[in-house]
Amino acid sequence: MNKLKGGIKDFAASPLTRISFGLVMLTVSVMFVSEFLGLVPDTKKAELQARKAITEMLAVQLTTNIQNNYLNGLNKTVDSVVERNDNVLSGGVRLASGELLAQSGAHQEFWGLSPTDKSTPTQVQVSLFNGGQRWGSLELRFAELGSGVGGPLKGNPFIYLVLFISFTGFIGYRLFLNRALRELNPDAVIPERVRKALDTLSEGLIIVDNEGIIVFSNAAFARKTGFLPEKLVGKDSGSLDWSVNLLKGDSDSLPWMRAMAGEEQAHEIRLNLTTALKENFAFNVNISPITASEDVIKGALITFDDVTELETRNEALREAMDRLEESQQEILEQNEELVRLATRDPLTDALNRRALFEMFDAVFTEAIEAETDVCCLMVDIDHFKLVNDTYGHGVGDEAIKFMCNTLTQYSRPGDFVGRLGGEEFVVVLPGANTELATAIGEKMRKALDAGDKEGYPEVPHLTASFGVSTIYNDAIDAKELLNQSDEALYVAKETGRNRLIC
Image 1: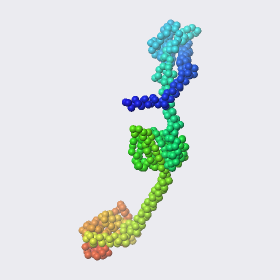
Image 2: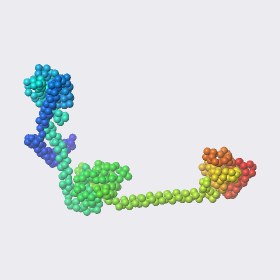
Image 3: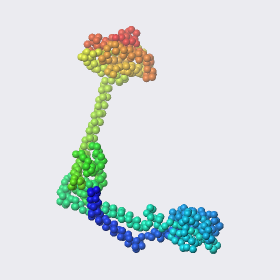
Image 4: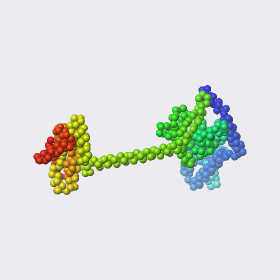
């Protein structure tokens, strides 16, 4: 409470408050002099003229109805005037005899004049004539003068205008004077010798008050913005076209405003500035809050280290690294394609003969060292020459693809399929014993026998013969193991084909 009272006392004692109050009094005095001299329009007189015009217009219309003996329309005519004019409370047409012939609104309640009384600003009566004789009178009851002016503010609108200008003028004068004094007297904040010393710095520097208004700018910062230092004084620092670096999770508010609000700031703050000439600068920003007594923050000193050239070089370096990564990726993809072309059969995408033997040798050596199983299947399409001679080489190629696809489909993830040549294929099964290899081979043989009319509709019915050999048949290397499976394949063909022989 004491702090609040002290704040009010300081506000009342402020020179800005006293000057603003004096200017308001001067403005009000000018308004009253204008009123005295008649320079302010008389709203009441204008309102009386409007009431007179309404009454005369209605009287002329009613006289026309009376002369045409259209008495039934009198009430409707009076109603229309009362409904369309907010200031008309009621209306009536009274005969010369005193009888009220037509009325609108609570006219009997509102009306208080006798036929011989003179009209007033709120009660107006006009005689109506027919054929040169007085026929009756028109009576209109109006609201009090000024009641329709100023909306909810009833009374003299000039007084309310004075009060409104006094209140708004005080606020406007005080704000204007506060900014004007700040711009006209920057030396009160920064002494001249300090200004000259700060102007010698190569990095930009500004000082802002606790509202973010610039109270000083050195020459280096002013040159970056394109303004003269004295033109920056009094500007809101946030009115410059800043772009806050959000990469480190900062909010989009200016860092010195957050620092003056008591928030902890990162050691390195990056800001970008776009000048009026559309030049872009990057700054590393350092902030030092300026405190007064009782640790009250009065403003901040901000320095700007121009890192635009460094940022440009970093961006060029990032672009070069991106291009290098793209080139490395392209090279990697090309190498992978070259490896695929060097190791794969172009028709079936199975391992070609050279790659098959290389992988088979490696698997065989590993199995010997680890004393584990490995089996080999050699597969050959039965009567394949007849397929080529009967259906052509195109269908023969499809038959070979069907064979390779079936062998791959029923192989395990660690197995590999290679094309030995022509219609002959080899399947190597690391870790498989004779029983498992035989089971896998039987699935392949039955699938080939069943065919695949949906996937390979042109391929005729095919069968294949399988020869199986295992590492425990005393083969000394992969080549000998392959020869053993070839001998088993020969037995399968000689004993009727479409079968598997171990």
